Image (tube, rainbow, N blue to C red; front, side, top):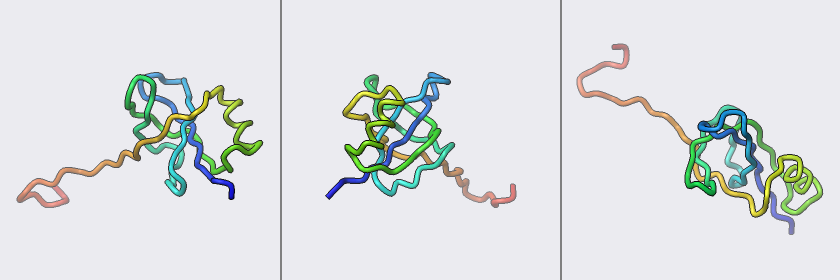
Length: 96
């Protein structure tokens, strides 16, 4: 049985213009513009999702994407999606 994985092309927030390919968990539902934490050779870094797709691991389509992105295997991973939540202060209403 072929394993399906999500491939995610990301732009590091520190290196604008440079894009890198990562593997994300299946059904992670990442979309363009999402902020994510990625594992890099320099440690964990914040990045922005530029594109994503689901492919069969080891398929011709997978190999073509990896090659087109200039990525090396094994692919580094997306660690988490970054979500923002506003702070709530006691005694203040939401409209203030």
